[in-house]
Length: 334
Image (cartoon, one colour):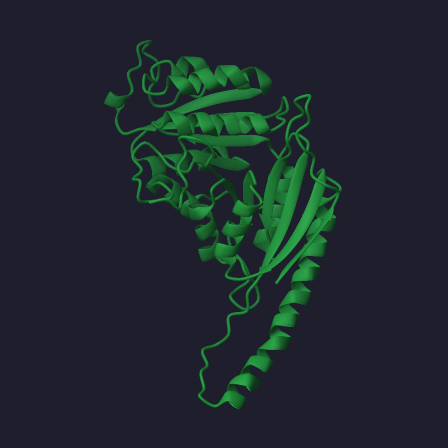
């Protein structure tokens, strides 16, 4: 089963160098958590054009049943037909409401309904649509009433080839973004470059957090306060990071410090996860942004250890940056 519909075609790249559309893949089940994801899509200041594909996976897992009597098996299969039809009718209603809520604020909206296991179906269809971002809720309605469970969102975060927005709360609309950076220059640069896709206003506040294992790992030649450097300029704070000069270079290229009202940097010492979470509670951001893998990640895991822990414990919505292209391996590759 596959049903699609659309309102307006997505914009294409033209010969004159017109910017290609940002393609967001919104997987919904109509739950409150999915509505948080929808609200996050509407709240983030995207640069136009933006195309949204709204998808719902219809999956009615039957209870275990087996019979050698063909008539009994046929009767059981027939009893599941109205359940599937009921799920399809509800899915159509959910998709219609989502499309109505989104179409006035984005360039175009398409809807899709697919049968199959939700986690795998979402990842497969997002890959087929070649999207830039998958947006999902962190919790759904349950195995028979809904389709986005915690296990499904975890599956999407682990196996999607693109970045993933995992909505836990409604958007606060304060323009605050907390970026957690580690010692992996390419992912740190990717996190910063993700901001280029946003039309940030002068009221935005970008707060960069870097956690060092110990004070000895952070040489501070100017003798500044090592415990917290929130009031120092980003350039001054990045200067001692000999292992991540690309971060500073990318930041200067994007002129993030001149583009928004504030760019601050906080240095912390200790274990990454508890220190980042402490910074989240202190800063209270709209969104926590971090790379899918860090300097100490192993090749065997699609997500790094820190990313997994932040997804599980962050009190706000999170965005896991996994940019496509050379140098960023397919999360399903082994």
